[in-house]
Length: 268
Picture 1 (cartoon, rainbow, N blue to C red):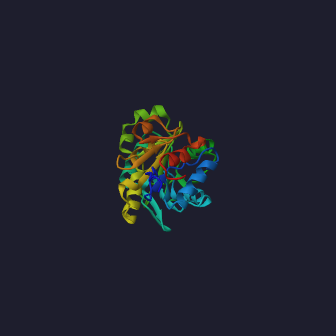
Picture 2 (cartoon, rainbow, N blue to C red; picture 1 turned 90 degrees about the vertical axis):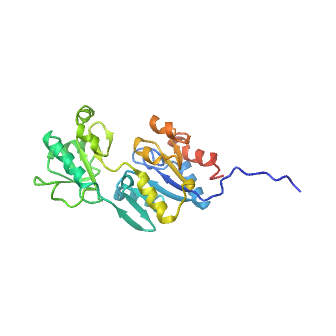
Picture 3 (tube, rainbow, N blue to C red; picture 1 turned 180 degrees about the horizontal axis):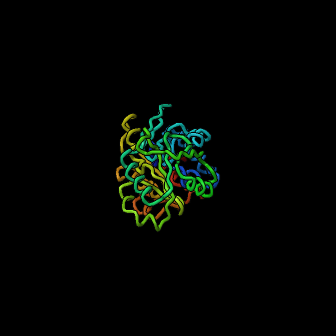
């Protein structure tokens, strides 16, 4: 009779939540490297649960996820979930938006808002359109409404403001706002706690903390790198994320996800 050896492979079903931009998707336009696509498919073959956890609006994540067969989502920075085809998206805090838009108006800062979870922003200032056309190549449709009143709209799902880094440092009111910056020219006002959406999925599915695995690369992933979950930072991640991660893998464009999954024994 042969010797019995204990395997290092973790046989429990895991629930993976992947950031999109800079984690599973790289380049412009975004694409999934072959090694990452292989790892995701192997995880699914091995019976694991796969979801994205992104700051993107649902409407801007859906096409990407459909392309790669990812049906579960945490979107809108933790305010949106898609599970078993059921879509649930919560708007931003209305009073927060009223307060910060008042500050933008006082400081003559061009701003815009999304009134639904769709690829359309509404603004009263053509300067916003001109700046964002240059910065984003019109990845959103623009509606200019000179009478746009933040107090009269029902819901706001994202906000945008054309603020440079220097002006940002002078606006104390931004301390009361959840926002991210991906460009020197503007900020995006959006939820920044993906763990909220992950918790909702966990509650719906009865998932235990020990079975949750999160992958990320940027500051908007910090709040989902919780100590009770397994957190993996990409090699290309920001320093702040690497410092709190359980494991730092290779870069996203160097097989980082596959490398981590093999390291932990989730795929062969």
